[in-house]
Length: 297
Image 1 (cartoon, rainbow, N blue to C red):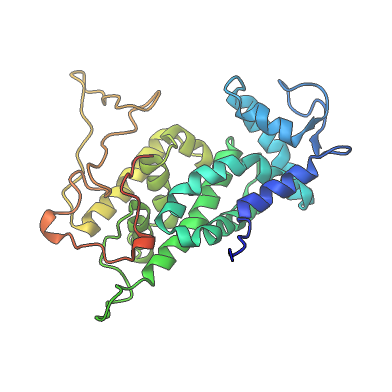
Image 2: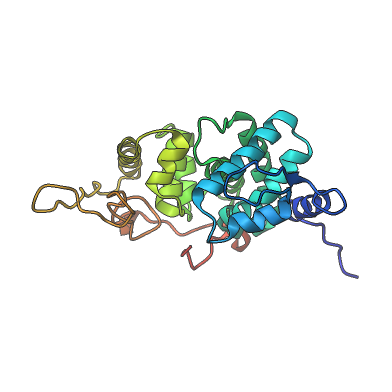
């Protein structure tokens, strides 16, 4: 007899979203709400497809999400579900690596991400954030990362000989190294999120600056200061300086319009050379909570 499987939170969200957008009275963006979109009521399922299409500009995407965010903040209920449904593909993508770390907790991770999204809706004013979708997904992922860090901190080594509750530092996944750095008071949670999303995720410094409402250069210096603290805490080598052009200007190392990516760690840790070989300890976590062998995004 097979054990019945329950739908995961993101699947439940998709079902509720589809039901809200079904005929004869689908939840829709009103006609003319966003310049650049068809001047007719647009069901949110259709709106999601339009916003995900490569031909849709960032200006239109941000404006549409801002309108949905205003409705969700003002009315909640079905508009919160509608906004979450439009963003669910981004939520799936940003939490997939966390679910790979602890697949048995995937449902809990998704639930925490949705809680983080609802909290983000309440504290994100679209008038002050030019990229509301990026900010909301960032906050959802940050909440889910906290659950994974807490879960792994309670995992001991299986077998006859007991092991300490906390696995040997650093954990096998860089997000969890950052989470421990926050727990130890090395850096602030916001700085850990900045490092994780711009170094390990797909967010550029320009996008992070837009989310934080700061200049890109200020965000770059903020990230560098936080990374230096983490490197010193891990006992790693000093962070390398940016390469200089002959004229003294920083060399552009990969991000459009700025010189944001100055180095990339050759191991999953923030030092340029990672932890010294002599200090590495075998991963003692159960196989179910081991990180994937392929760490490429």
